[in-house]
Image 1 (cartoon, one colour):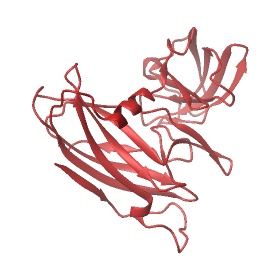
Image 2 (tube, rainbow, N blue to C red):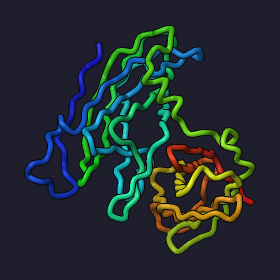
Image 3 (cartoon, rainbow, N blue to C red):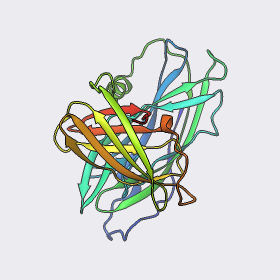
Image 4 (spheres, rainbow, N blue to C red):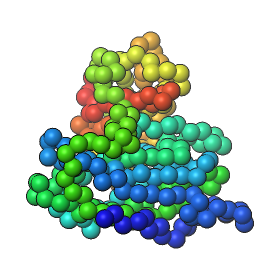
Length: 267
């Protein structure tokens, strides 16, 4: 049986109008139990439903957003978890850019069990943000027993998986490279992507494998077929550091489409 959502008290990022909506009006969530894949993993999902006008954030939410955090430590028979993020939207509000989802997010959760073929007990605590005119950090808890199911019969999960970003090969990326130079408090990274345009107003997001590294909002422009993006990377020591190029992820977003590129070699 799946246990209903539990929402913790909300702490507001800004003053809340006296007539603000209640927590239940803003956000609801459920665990979709999913199925067992041909590879022996279990594909479940978290579904978040938001009140009209409210949004929640992608894994890299932009400088004004709140990144989601997941704690799976209460789960049983789980060796590893992978989140399959659907293509997000880019939002502009008061001169600030954020990245996320409006109205609903179905986030597929792929689980590698310790004991294949045995039931999985999934328990997760999620800290996330939701935003309209104000930004509200929220905490929720979901749990459920995930038993083997032979067929991928959940249309919501299948739809979210189909909405994933394209790979570099699928998007026609011919080549990509990154130049890294030291800066006063870290590194300056320039990425050059030889790829066809996704559409107008392309947004480039650069992520590192180390969550302790702060990454600025990238600036980008076109030089013919090449999409060029630049960003600043600042580590905890606020000085130049050794960058794991293989751990870089470069995402390009435009017009409801996305491309995700893993790693970035030197020229």
